[in-house]
Image (cartoon, rainbow, N blue to C red):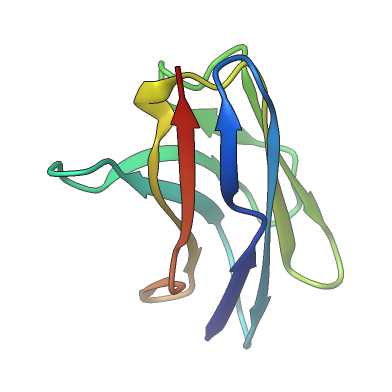
Length: 112
């Protein structure tokens, strides 16, 4: 499985960004986003089921972030609204088959 993420950048607090990730490979099931803030462990942001019907969010993401998925292309998106400085970090796309795979990461920087 290979993952290609894009869409990171720098915004001011209250701004929005949309991340995209394309996965290539077979038997991809759950996909999602993780992030690693500076000096901290990687943490879950959101996940989405294979058919897009089921989603799960970290408490910090609920009400501000929306994860979505296109059915055929194993492409997921993360719409991030009302971004805050604590949302800064490297965002990693994840795809699960019988194993877990992560993409190369995309930087998100939110300034106050």
